[in-house]
Amino acid sequence: MQLPYIEPFIKCICCSLHSAQLLKGTSYDPPVHQMGGGGGGKTRGLPDLLPHLPKADRLFEPFVGGASVFLNTDYPRYVLADINADLINTYLMARDATNTFIGVAKELFENGNSPIAFYRNRDMFNAISDDECLLKAALFLYLNRHCFNGICRYNNAGFFNVPFGGYKKPYFPEAEIKLFAEKANDTKTALVVADFSKTLKAKAINESSVIYCDPPYLPASDTANFTQYHHAAFTHEHHLQLAKCLLHVRYETDAAVVISNSDTPATREIYQHYLFHEVSVSRSLGAAVASRKKAGEVIGVLNAGRLRHA
Image (tube, rainbow, N blue to C red; front, side, top):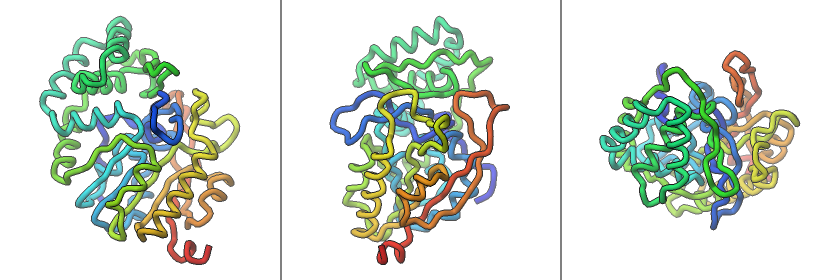
């Protein structure tokens, strides 16, 4: 695929987006971190990732985050899932009510770049019912572009609580919204609120499917734990559960399985059946762009031969 890559309209700057809100009916309490892929957004890692995603009839993403993989691949069908209902609702409104969604969101952007407006809109987002899908989606996009560093964080009561970012003029991603909507409609993309275990039980997964997982990253050190902002982290145990689920679905369906994560001993132990490809990307969390550092990551491909001989 030729550069430049298509950018998501939800700003992507860290692990696949999951809400810190304690959601009923899920197998884990989602962590707090930013949107995108591990600590710096998935778009910058696409040149390394895309060669490892094989041709297939359908791509499943249990941790869709900013959807940059969706936007930059050419599968006939997609299932994009995430545990964050606000994120999936925003994608649904972008797909199903594109022009109205753009109009409502654009008005928020035009009059909302001040602390007073930001906290008023944040309070509105936290107060309105989930049934007010269009306004909720527009506010989510507004908060994503105006809050500090694009972080998505909720407190224990389920309220979005990231402070004002103070940016000079947040970009309104109208063209990106339209590109997302066009592709989602053309490919009849399924957008699903679900945790990874439910997504990986989908009956549509078969030998013609690819599963790509970009879960919250295992910490590279004690000071690099991207989920430490909240007690409901995606833990070592959740990674073990994910690895077990992926082994099962690979064995039962013969679907291709690819993951991304930090390059740590824990990653290589938990996902020991994978063939790892080492990559280095620039990433930061809650820091200035100038402070970004190169971080070791791996792309793991679940090799059928390794699985058969496990």
